[in-house]
Length: 314
Image (cartoon, rainbow, N blue to C red; front, top):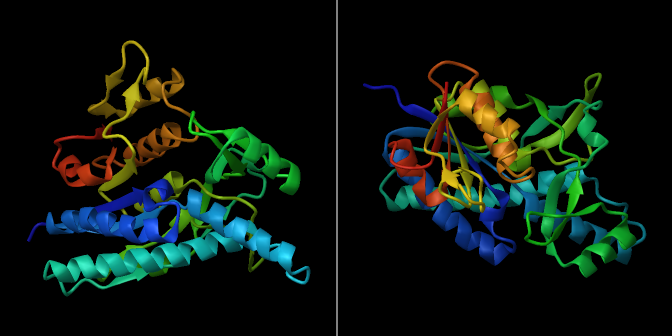
């Protein structure tokens, strides 16, 4: 029997909707695409972002603090943990239902609340760059900056968002458990929102005020699980050079060296496509045979079959 292809799939937080009703709808569509891959004979591990959701949780906890002076401010690491659990809950239920609808009854689905160690001296703590929360107008953003001392930045022409530190993931704390579950045939949701950022203090893991980029966390997860494919899902079918300019070119199949050249030439927007291409390159060059794919959620199956998407390899 041919060994199943092992795939780590990185879902964007924006693809999960901005409200709970939107999320309930979104996870159904997402689950269909993931189970498509399972029907193609792939072993799938799911990681996801939480940009809009962690911002929503954070704002809700701030509102609680304002209502009840006895309630201390909730650390960002705890907000990430909350977002992991409620996104995982919706996602695992939708995946379970989709599997059963297709007559697949032997794949258990579970969410692992995952901590990811970061370096307390990571320079990212000095230059916050990771957008979280919903898009705001300039006026709303100025108000948030004034009221809560947030750093607000314009995000790719879509409006203003809060930005927080985004240190690089160094170690997935629960990797042993995740590996055991995946090896026994479970469909695992892990490293939600990039993982709960923690720093090591002796035997204690202390939450850090940050949101880890889910693309880099997914890359580390894929390497640790010895995956064949890392699929990074985006809002476009392929990555492009000269995007939105004369000479725009959609990328089909590129080598790691070509991708690095395009990164150096500044073709990918920081905070959106750039980390996706960087994570894809890091995974593809980590071992011969490994490939990364950047594409739309509904094109994931076609991408694996080599029909679409941007494929990056050695």
